[in-house]
Length: 338
Image 1 (cartoon, rainbow, N blue to C red):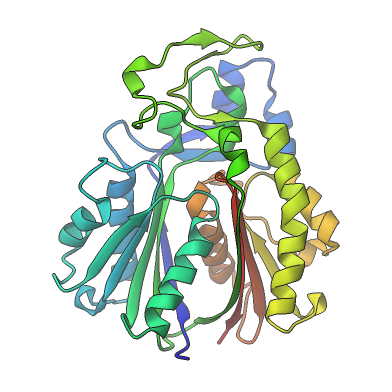
Image 2: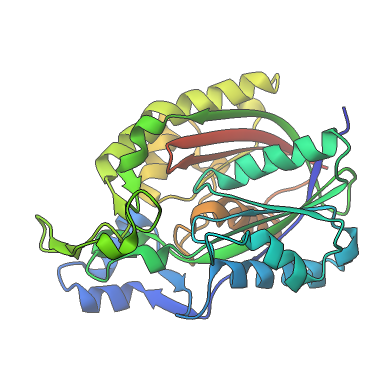
């Protein structure tokens, strides 16, 4: 089977920054120190009112092309992961193909996944390459969860930031690359309502959403993002450790063979809990989210690029990537730097 490699990663963060000081001013009962200690985030970037996931995905892709001197005509397939598309139709990836100047013989599609989106995108890209359909896949992830958040929702506003990432997945090695290994993927739709925006689709049109006051004094509606934090925590605590063990085994490795475990950067409290459950030392479990927050489908890529820029990862090392969240959906893959 033809091998596939993650060759390059770039990301884009919007200009507007929401700091912990800003949030503490809005919500005096929340101190800057409390937010930083529990969530592990100092600031998050927020998309402008007229800036969409599609816009950010285009910017991230252009950064990728410029930083690594990639010819747009070399892209055979475009995959765009987003849960906040510009339109129900047409497909955002089709608009992106045109805006990026990709050739018309390039395949393009959207897929709707959140925190596991990068892992699923890698699995799709690897399949396209292994089958001979594509040699170079542009995998773009972009999300503007801030546009789903009620202004009074201090919990979610401390966690989520907006961002987009672009990755080149190829059938050959360019520079510092990572060979893509075996995958583990999982789904449990019974948890769908624990992380959801109920209104806006065909099941419940947005114009029917009514604002109500919840038990905590927050004003909210079905058009806002709802997250049942305790249930999401229980889901990850139950499923992620087994996901990790399964993926290590699938790749014919032992836990001690993995140099770094790069998980979806959800929040510091959850990540530290998962690290302890899988019994991994802190120096093998990097967390890189304090400057951007939980960017949903781009967290792993931002962490990987940051580690690369810090020269904290090197040739020959094995990294287990794991994403998990909305859906419920989860996935893991082990990559080897080459």
